[in-house]
Structure formats: structure tokens, C-alpha cells
Image (cartoon, rainbow, N blue to C red):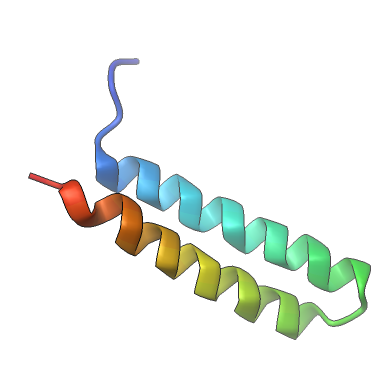
Length: 54
């Protein structure tokens, strides 16, 4: 497994934030809110990590 390009890393970050949001939502019994927060953070991380794609 060689180097990962930015789109692969941004995809992994998106899924990671989504799962963390889901976990926090389950913890506080607010699954929908947790998923939406995870989605928002995931999209922000994709925008930051994906800016250097060539």
C-alpha cells in the first residue's frame, strides 16, 4: 500500500467524522443531531484535505 492521495484521505476523514458523530448522537440519545454534526464536520474536512488534489 503506497501513498494515499488527498481524495482517499478526505474520504476516510469524512467517514471517520460521520461515525464519531453517530457515536456521540447515540451516547446522548440524539442520533439525528449527531449524524448531522458528523456530516457537517466530514464535509468541512473533505474541503480542507481535498484542496491540494492535482
